[in-house]
Length: 151
Image (cartoon, rainbow, N blue to C red; front, side, top):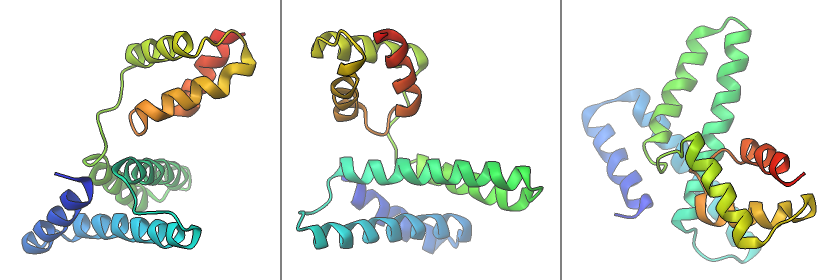
């Protein structure tokens, strides 16, 4: 089942079950997707793919993690908990995250595949990883590991 169809089915189920928090999170996901579709239409791009949707969801998770951290630092634990609940709902639609060992193996494979030999080749390695592992790894952490490997 396509990601968009899964989202719609889960939205209907949440409405029927009267799960207010889950319904709210699913509506936020749909709103983010619609915003991106409108922006894509303005750019003349076609319909969003599952990879595009996964990237949107990954960005939403990262935003909520930052918000939850800020709320916790500010002593607003109820708001932090709300953000963490939204993260749990969003992550249901993301592919499984790679373990640290799997990330290292993916980096090594991408370096070998691109023939990267120095820090100048980092962009090609990152592009190869993003093409294959969008939504499955933290690219900021991967970038640090690639730099350490290529120096």
